[in-house]
Image (cartoon, rainbow, N blue to C red; front, side, top):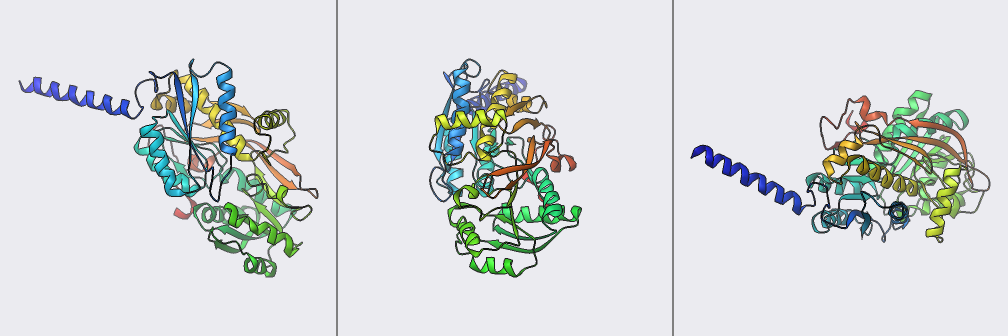
Length: 413
C-alpha cells in the first residue's frame, strides 16, 4: 500500500506539472494546438522613448517568414503591447503576454532599466526572451538572448580609433542609470590599453533638458573627446545646445546617439562633423544587404525618418529565433534554447553575418567605426568582422551548464 501510495503521489505531481506547463504555454511543441505561433512584443509606442522601429522591424521579418510558408507550417502572429516608456509597465505587460496571451517567445528593446525590470518575469516563467538593443553587457541568463552588440565589441574599436585620430583625453557625460555608469567603467578600462584616460565624468538624470552647465565644464576641460550617452526626448536637447555652443576643439563620441537616435540627421550640418560611433548597422552602410533592407523597410514604413541600428538588431533577432525553431522542430522553449546553444545558428543580416555564441547567448557581429562627415552622412572608416562577445566567455560562463540569472559588470570587479 505504501508503494502504491507513492506511485499515486508521483503520478499526481506529474499531472500537476503538465497542467501548469500547459497553462503557461509551455506544453511540448509550444502552441501545438494553435493555428499560429505567437511572438510577444513589448515596445515603447508612446512616452519619452516612443518609436515604431522595433515593431516595424519585427513586422517586416515576420511578414517575410509568413509569406515564405511560415514557421513549422504555421503563421507567426505578433501580439504587441505598448510599454509607454515606463519601466514598471514592462513587468506588467511581460506578465500579460506570457500568462494571458500565452506567447511562444518574448521580444523587447527599450532601455537597460526596462530590460532588467522584465528579465525576472521571463526567468520566473521560463520564457524565451530576446532583447533587441545594444547594451552595457554582462547579462547571463538561460532564458535570455542578447541580439545587440556589447561594450567589448564596440568600445575597443572606438577608443582605438579616437586615441589615434582625435586625442587621448576623454570627458564622459552620460545618463544616470545602469547603462551610462557601466559604459563609463568600460571606457576607463579600455582607455588604458591605448594610453588614453577619462579626465572627467558626469552622470545626469534622464529628466534633465538643460545642459548649459555641463557644456561649460566640458569646454573648460582639457578633453579631446566627449563620450555621450543620452536617453529619451528630454536629453536629446543636448545636441542642439552643443551645436549652438560652437565648440570646435572637442569631438563627440557615442555608442547609441548616432546609430540609434540619428542626431546627425536631426541637426543642420556641419554642427556634428567629426563625431564618432561604433555600430553594427546604420542606414548609410553601402552594401547590397543594407540597400535591400532599406528598400524593404521603406516600402513598409515610408515615413520612417531614419533606419537605425536597432531596426537591424530586431530584424536579425526574429530570424535567429526562427532558425532555431526550425532546427528544434518545435517552439518548446527548452528545445529552442538547446538549438540556439549549438553554435550553428546564424543569419546574414543588413549589417553582415551574426552568429549566436551559444555559451553566453550573445552574438558574434561585424562592427564598423563610423565618422559623421561635413554633410552629416555616416562614413565607415574601419570595419571589424565577426567580433567576439568575449566578456562572459573570459569569465568562464557557460549557460548550457549553469544559470546564474545575473548581470556581471566591471563595477563588480
